[in-house]
Length: 382
Image (cartoon, rainbow, N blue to C red; front, side, top):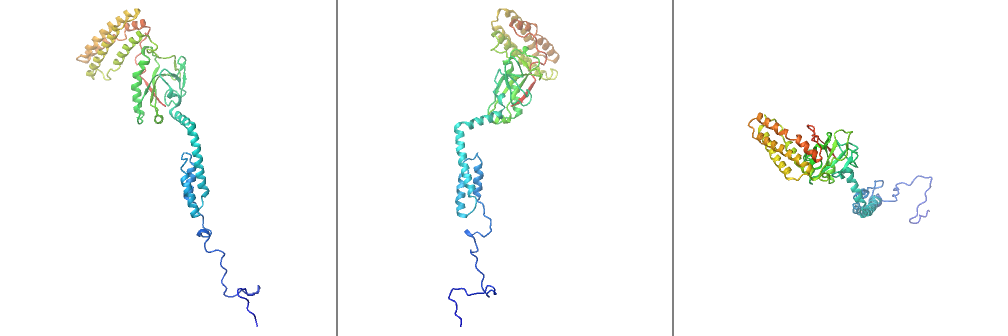
């Protein structure tokens, strides 16, 4: 007779015998899901805000942008079990570091210094600091882009001499073509105020100008720099070309002012011939006649030095004759009659009496060659 085993005890089984029949398999040590309900072997997702926080933390120009997404990411990670906690913390820490560094830089003025250096680099360096009366060398030449120059004494050899600086109004960049037109208009109108004696101008001297570029305009560059330079690239200039009230006496200034006013009127001669446009030439002759009247009045009204009184009086007599001929040209009925009066009027301008008066005043006595006078131009951008 056998005795049954006590309740709960495992019956003896021969380890070498067959397994018991109909016994259910042992249950796994855990349930069908792992911790937090994630299937075994499934990848762990990265919190998106943690990635954003890290990226924003690296960008120094957005110093505080990573703090908020970093804190939100940490809260979400604790709730969902996602990864990315280290990235969220790193982003927030980097933002804090950038805030501290920016505070130090701004308080010390280092940012302002760096910004000014960037602007100077973009604006063309020394060429923008040139002023009226400055002489300089341009390593890159006067034609084309002139980004840098070396200021030098005017007494020695130099590439250019500034005779005027024109400041343009603000607003949107007007375009290269418009700035070139303004440079033509302004610089040629101002050259005779700086170098009043056009007869003293060397034959190879031309007018150049440095103009703002689209890039330099963005940084506040509004200056057109008008300058004299040599048409011969290897020749350059020697000595200053300045001849204005700062270097001339009163007699010389009065004489040259009247002469330049007449030259400006003569320069407006119509492009078409009298045969093709007699009316335009007659109107121009009237203009010259009126300017001559103003010149004669100014010369007569000035008290000249003793040695210049007679030469100037002789010049005034010639100018009165020329004025009469210009009046007759302004009323000519045909091109042939116009030419006759025009030739007689022109003979009295810059004739022997002009040379004698100039000599008495200590001015240049050799008339410029035809076409001379700096009317060719060249432009450069800074």
